[in-house]
Length: 317
Image (cartoon, rainbow, N blue to C red; front, side, top):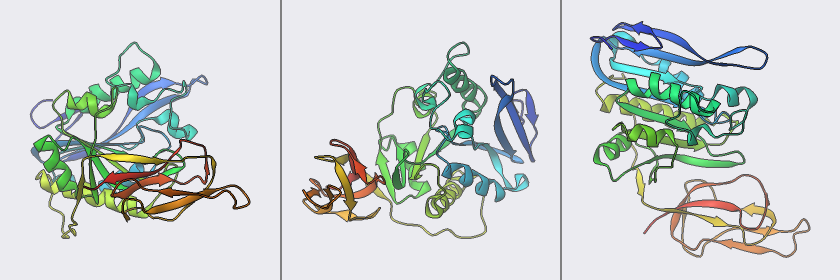
């Protein structure tokens, strides 16, 4: 980078400009070239450099729409700093509507990657080199895995003061203390000293209006907190609930699940969450919580096996 210019993939974006860049990734067996789509909005004044990424898991779509709506609201001449937006990181999985890459690797377990490794490793290396290394802050947008849904929540290292203030600025319904997973984008960026928020909301292969709106509003709040932008409308603040631990309530037997709770509901210890039966409604087994908590996620598939995670509870002391 020179002065306030931003250079990504040998493209230079001067202050006060917005530019679309397609970074070549790899060719399919048909020789069709797939590229990483990037939109850079470089402000007229220096400031924070915020990356926004989505669809690291190719079937997690809410973040794609969140980034589109955020970009619509940003004008480079009113921006301090830079927004680097990558709405579809796993372009291979996105095309196939799959969480994974063609070799079944999870891209979010492949960071920081390698120039000579697997396809996942090479794509992770490219993302680190061209996106993360240009940034001071990051927000990675996710949904629950397929057949599950999540309450809008930020997962981050809340014990780190700068990251905690970053998460508070996003102002989600729930902030969850989250351990860093080996090979994740969050781990690789954190090792470079970059605060990262992981936003989880909604389900795979679906647009969820509440999840999308909460994500858009959260990113706009973060941009104001980082002194990057002043938006004309005052955004409503909520009381974020800070959660240190969570646990899954699991099925004690296989059968057909009937849930009786909703996302965001406060749950008391020993409260009934639902029940499991056979197809005739016989052999009913009640599902109860063994902690006080809040429902931050649950299974959408009524067919369960013994040991399946059914309800994800944020533990409330």
